[in-house]
Image (tube, rainbow, N blue to C red; front, side, top):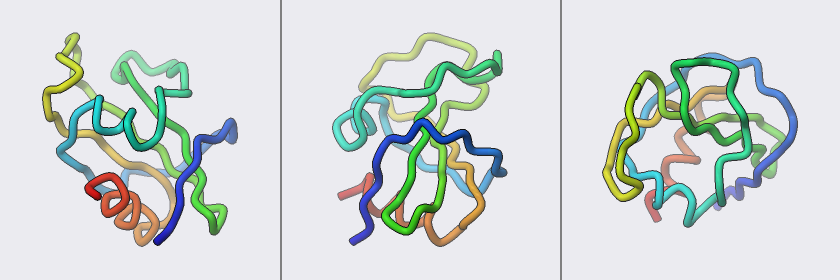
Length: 94
């Protein structure tokens, strides 16, 4: 199984897919958000690198509200490698 770690590397990727999951579930697997987004459309964002050095981000696009940490919402996954994004979903759901 692929591993994912927080990274300080900046990702300039593109939207790949989504996952319905809660903030708490992401924090349990990845830790707290590590990106201070300049986008007003993003509240929480994680920058990640997998063990193949693929960069990804997971973020709450256009929620425009404070949501309960245990509420499942649609998070977006961005990057440059679709397979890595699908593996991230598998990792988060286990």
